[in-house]
Amino acid sequence: MLSHRAFVYAFFAAFLAFRAAAQEVTAGFEGGPSSGLGFISPIFSFPLGTADAIIVKPTVSYLYYEKRTFLGETKITAPGAALGVGYRYSDGPFEFAVGPAFEVLWERRRNLFGPDTKETLFGVMVAGDASYQATPFTNLNLSASYDQTNRYYWSRAGVKQQVTNLQFDKPWALLVGAEVTGQGNKDVTQLSSGGLVEFAFDKGQTGFQVRGGYSWLNFADHSSDARPYVGAGLYHRF
Image (cartoon, rainbow, N blue to C red):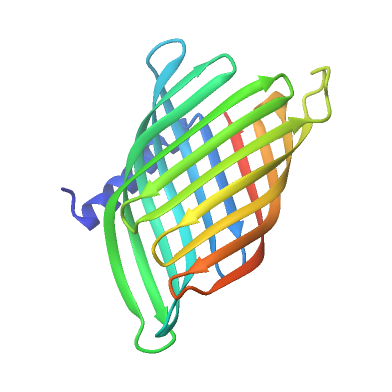
């Protein structure tokens, strides 16, 4: 298995080698004062046929959340880098992608009582997403990932409805939607529900999303909390 340092070198070498040739890029942030996740990821596609392809996906991310136990509160931050290879299928209204990634996390735990701790974690994550264009104006989508590195899972189900440019004669459109998200690990689990507004440009080649809603959190000490969240996302196909 690659050492931590070798993995980091391989990740940045791949990122620099491919950055000029990326076909897509995605970026986003979602969270609140106590928990959140941000990321940026170019995507490189190598067709296998007319409907499927191999994708290469380097990602830089930043995760933060709280842990509560009977001994006190711990604030956890985990910046990371991952290099994934997956399979994508797209045929008409249906599309899905799935694949593993090798990841390194630099985790820091700030303890209310006791010294802070730092640890470099190395492992594998698996992610997948699927979407179905149920009508010309309605899209159903599902995404999920599991990070073996820190045992963190994330999943989302959503629906989007196009409400402008119903004749498809303009280069931009407005969509509105709703989504439900579940995420967490043994330290904290979180269920979120909210809405989104998406601005699609260049006939769907570029999309910008703004989202918000409410999250319900359950901690390891059996306490719970409810807090609002906000987020933004960007997608562009070159």
